Length: 213
Image (cartoon, rainbow, N blue to C red; front, side):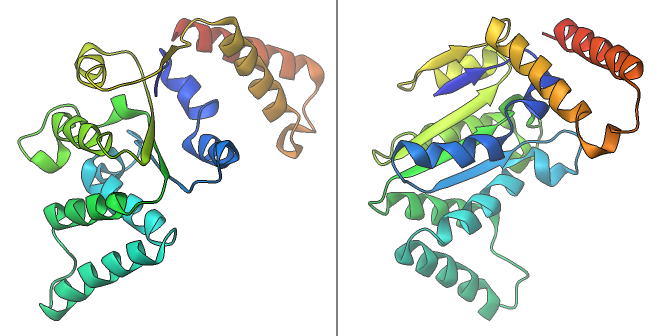
């Protein structure tokens, strides 16, 4: 599934991977591994080199065979006195984990915030798109990708079977933004603020959110 959102701010507040991951198991009890590309953080949170180790650790605890694969990977490079396995070896291990015949949900959130171009394949978005395409070939794997609608991303992902949701300007998203802002302003952090100030903040944040859509 590909979920297109036109607003970076909305993805940060409305569609966090953690919220999706929390509800996906209700569809069938399958484990969920998720990763959020965050362009405000260090390069590790914006590239494959950050995503792959994270997915490995999350998937390892979902099945004894996957845990064994991860243990073997790190044991091999520990014996060589290396700090950790290279990315290609981790990618192979991740694919081996996905090949274990057990259903898995993968959530890739804010894909458009991945570094777009780089001479280093570890940080190139095309390499990430190729990897997601490879993941989609496993019959037991279901993938949810959220991204702003960008041609380079759309052109690659539409080559795979998918359900596409474009909610950039939907009334539901507008309602979600309002609900989120109101919920945040009703927390203890803002309980000493008067209603007039809260109303101004709410109006300003909502207007800014609509302008980025």
